[in-house]
Length: 287
Image (cartoon, rainbow, N blue to C red; front, top):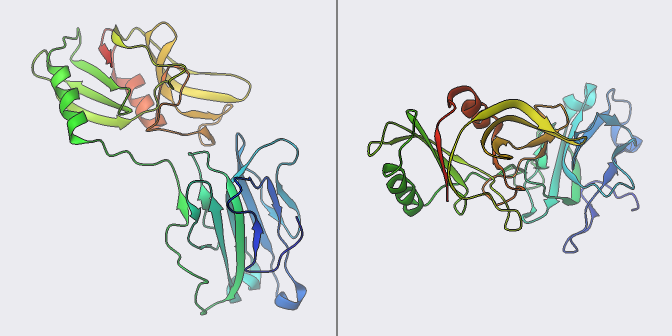
């Protein structure tokens, strides 16, 4: 696409097309003799954050059909002293977000939404922002369970027995995992987590099972899943997908949806808690 000047839109809206990469430069008419530069990096599908680029260098990918999902832009030197850099992303399912600035993350991470268009503005310190600075970033949605779903889970728990003092309940429709402590007829929920069970074409197995194994990680050439806890054959509780070998670069962090190939995905901290604390022999109920 051609170069556009500050405040104008690069990319497209309403056409469901992704941005795969971007070049950003500074006009010498604007910066004059000020020291410093502009730096930027992109968060790319299946890759995560790329390295910082500057002054017209390309950030992103080309020819690999991978979408940019977020961007960070910052100034250095005297430029950062006298100017603020504002930028706003138009992303899938949300449209235009608020204006981020000075290194903040604009766009989304963990929910696989493409950036479709961008606006960038260089603004003198003390001058107002180009627009609202609220809601400039989205990450995985927080799931608030409906009371009715919780009532069903707790009622179902009370008629289950476990050979340990723990019981794991998983509601694949509401996409939530409940951790209970106690005994038959006297279970108390100690944790409730959003999860990513199997999608309709590869559903999570339903029934009553028992925890019998665990491991630090598994994966493929492109991803790693951390802290798995095994309850039936190849069906596991485990973390969301990370870039291979990484515990910080999320490849697919979707939760609150039926998204997996059959396992139950969790936030990495919750997956580790199960891995560390739930003993073999614990009853697992999937419904």
